[in-house]
Amino acid sequence: MASLSYLMICVLVSLLNPISCYGQSKAEAEHKALFVFGDSLFDAGNNKYLKNVSVAALSWPYGETFFKHPTGRFSDGRLVPDFIAQFAQLPILPPYLGTKNKTAHHFTDGTNFASAGAGALAETNSDKISLPEQLSYFKNVVEVSEAEFRTQMLLRSDRRQYVEMVIGNLTRNIWFRRKEICTSECRAYGLHTKSSIAESHQNSECVEELTALSRLHNRDLTNVLENLESKLQGFKYSIFDYYNELRDRVKNPSQYGFLNGTAACCGRGEYRENDCGVNKTGTAVFDLCSDPSQYVFFDGVHNTERTNHQLAALIWSGVPNVTGPYNVKQLFKLA
Image (cartoon, rainbow, N blue to C red):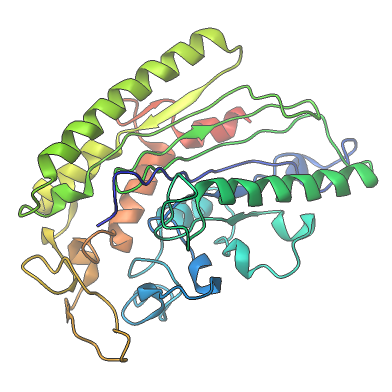
């Protein structure tokens, strides 16, 4: 299970399309791109490009539902950012390290920087892509893109960004909109609340502590956003109540079409909470359910594709008491 020290973010960004500031079509002007930062909840396969890193999600049965083969995603299928991209009419984003030619053209739709096991600090799981390193990759993309745009006089006057933030296994998504006049001045943000994945396993001794920390974090985050809104002109944000939405699926799975909200589909142990995937000897030593869509969790920590789809749909178009004061679909329209 992931440590509470893992502060990870997934960022959805609308960067400017590589087209002229002037004379672009309406479709070109409205084009959005998605940039994802995070840990295993969002990693689309970056870790498979790291040296001396063993990736369980590169073995069967990960990826079995949608991709029909392992991709490095810790799920039976698509992740939350994959569905957000779909809702935004973008393609599923590739892992950044898998993009050989890192030019502006290759990031027109965005990319995924997330790394399973990564931490907010560089020294946390230093063999993974830490948050500072992910952000440095993003900075490189921006610098390369802006350099190309300037060379071709392609900077246009209106650019907007959205950000989704995930904080380790206590997930919080932060979405922000940034309006620029050929600068990097930030104007608007959005976020969503944390949830303790430990709650999914009733035998976990750390549930009470993790839950208390989650609630404290969520309360403080709301206060910070309200303060920013009062101080920053044009600031707009969206908070998704991940904590309660995931918790309700764990406690009341049948209400959401699930058979089981506590045990995982794949793994070993009382709740199949450990060891999903083929081990180092190439042997499958886990139990596997016949239908992942009946489970909230695919392995002991990560969601099934069906859970990810439900949560992503709420982030995209949830009502104010779930995703507010704006949902992400509304933030896109504000761009």
